[in-house]
Structure formats: structure tokens, C-alpha cells
Image (cartoon, rainbow, N blue to C red; front, top):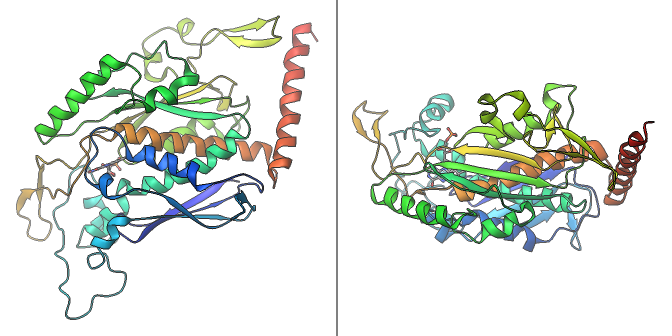
Length: 397
Ligand SMILES: Cc1cc2nc3c(=O)[nH]c(=O)nc-3n(C[C@H](O)[C@H](O)[C@H](O)COP(=O)(O)O)c2cc1C
């Protein structure tokens, strides 16, 4: 089973991830991980932190001569900003002659600050915000990049684009999904519609001028996933549920849709469910539409997986929201540290990573194997069987 843990504080020395369950023999090179780390750092509307950091991954275990060994893979992403925080984030107790940093006691609405301080018994909310920060999404993207390499071995790709920022929606119905990454990565706000792109950039500039922030919606698309990942038999095996949980685990994500999602509440069943047809020339089942977003009954159905997630506007506003000092009970503006105005384009990259992780987990569960060769044999055998069944059933057997 592909599983992982991440660790690290936003201004600590480094972020770390340990992944277990990657079969031996997978080619993994830092460059391909770094390319996705760079994508996460981009996007119009990001704050000053992205100019300080230039994330790259170091491998500490599990890889030899560019290939996985089957043992746990450890990855480290160093925080360049750590150099400016060695006292404020010191791991050792501070020396007697060093002043303690001023405690932050004014919680920001929309953050983990208030609940975290009370839950963990802290008085300085830095002890919460350092780990709650979306800086950790760098390690999620690193893990997701390894998952993508595994999926790519079997012809499965993951891409995303932004479909809404601040209520400005993007026209993307006619888009060739195979070109999605190329098209969205070429846009500073990761949208495939030039008219919407201009309006969105204007809206982000206007929000920044007002000291405000914007949220939005991104869509992740998986191509090439075989039929039968996930299962209908238990709540925690349903791939739609697993995708939703994984996307909801990203900071600031407030809702997830699979396929037609919430719009299916508005129209009758005859317009929602995707009819079956049989293509005699190609000898395969085809669907008239993909409103289900590639999953039925908690399993992939062989169509593209399409999921969308909504991100709330960034909660740290330069036009500070009202708050209360927990030490003095005095009403004061919320604490504001340099911050993004809009991070939906970046969140889409994190969404890709989370989706890749879930699909890779379901894939390794279904096809098993301690080496890529063993996994490939299992995969090829299954695909062959599915092919035979879908062909022979057309003959009426
Ligand atoms: C890619 C990304 C970047 C983010 N950047 C910021 C930021 O610069 N400032 C901020 O206040 N929150 C930022 N957030 C959101 C916070 O991390 C914070 O965890 C979130 O507002 C808490 O929301 P929750 O209640 O959904 O966990 C970002 C989130 C993501 C996914």
C-alpha cells in the first residue's frame, strides 16, 4: 500500500516526507519532482514568500542509481527562509542572553490559530500557524510527483486548470483534455480561456489594492485510469470518497464535486446519467457523456476522472479582520503576516498531487507487486481479461 507522512514547520529548517509502498524499479529523478514544485510556487497573486523560496527536493533514502529500491523513500525540501528564523524558530532552548520572540496572541479568523492554541495549550499562536501553513503543500506536491511517475508507467496522466476565481467563470467545455496541462500551465492564473484570464488578473489586482483576497475553483482530470480502481464494498474503499477526502485535506478547500456534482440537483436523471453504447468497429463499450466524472459505485469506470474543489479566499487579509487579543481580551485587528492574495492556481497543483496519490494508492492496492515488473504483469493480465470480456459480451456470450 502506497502511504506517506509529511513533517515540517513553515519557517523551520526543512519539510520532510516519507513514502512507503512504491515498488522497486521505478525511475525517480529529482528534476521531475522539482518541475512540479516549481509549478506549485507559481500563479498570479502569490505573496513574497514564493520569491524567497525556490523549492527543490533531496532524496535521503529508498533510491539508488535513479531507481526505487522498494524501501521507504525519504524526501527533504529545505526552507531557504530558515536562515532568517533561526532564533524565532530555534529547535534548541534559547540562550539566557537572547531575547525571546514576541508571542503572537491575536488569532486570524479563518485559520487554525484559535482552535489550535486552545487545543494544544499554546499561548503563542506561531506554535500552530507554522504547521497549519500551506507551506506543507510543497511536500504533498513532492509525494504526488512520485505517485505521478508510478501512474505514468501505466499511461495514466493527471492535469488541472482553474475554472473560477472570485466568481469569474472560465469557458472550458471545448477543451482537448490531453492538452489541458500544456494550456493551463501557459496561463499565469492557469485558465484555458484568454478572455476570463484578463478579467481574473484584473480582479486579483483590484482585490490586492483593497487589501482583500479571492478564492475560486480548480478542476483536476485524470486520463487513462483503468476501470475498477476503488470498490463499492466499503465506505473507505470508494474512490470518489477517497478523492473528496484527499482534496478536502488541502488547506482552505471547502467543497468537492465529482463530475457534474452539485449541478445534478438541478436536472432530471435522464440528463444526468451517462448512457452505454457499443462501438462494433472498435469492439468496446462507449458512453454518451461523462457526467459521472469517471466513477460509478465508488469505482473508476474507465472514463476520465473529473473532480473539482472550491478554495475559500485567503484568510490573512492586509485589510485586517477584527479579532481579540487572547492574552488581554482587547479587540484588535487580526495579526497579518505576508500572504497571498489568491492561491487558487497553486492549489490546483496541490489538487493534482492529492488526486495522483489517491489514484496511485488504489492502483497499488489493485495491482500489488513489489517491483514494477510484477505490477506490470498483474496490470497487463487484468487489462487483457477486461478486453476479452468486453469483446465477447458483444457476441452475446
Ligand atoms: C496553495 C495554498 C496557499 C495558501 N497561501 C496562504 C497565504 O498566503 N496566506 C494565508 O493566510 N493562507 C493561505 N492559505 C490557506 C491557509 O493555509 C489556511 O490553512 C487556511 O486558510 C485554513 O483553512 P481551513 O480552515 O480550510 O484549514 C493557502 C492555502 C493553499 C492551499
